Length: 107
Image (cartoon, rainbow, N blue to C red; front, side):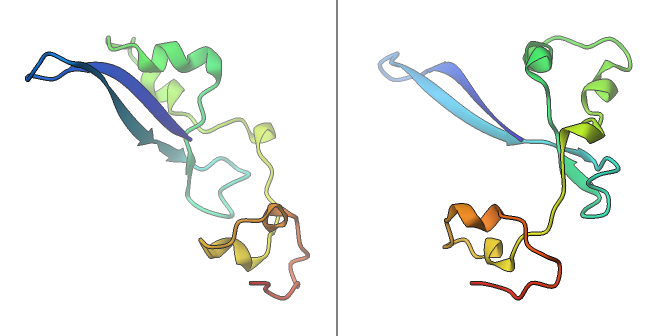
């Protein structure tokens, strides 16, 4: 999960108004679905929590931990895909097609 945050920024010279774009990526502890794959997973905030996450004020005690909790296990699925996904130059829809665990690698 990544966030793109746009905020107006005023340059010192000429007082020209521009837009500053910032990108962030958050991780949290893996849930039971992701744990066999990796010990972390992307932080996934439902749209109902966006305003609270982006609000610049303090949160009540314990609320940050609630927001940083792993996603519900029924939200994600895990399945094997071919090793061709590891090559950045590959960009085809079938890269995310499930494959049998014993399938040979395709480049």
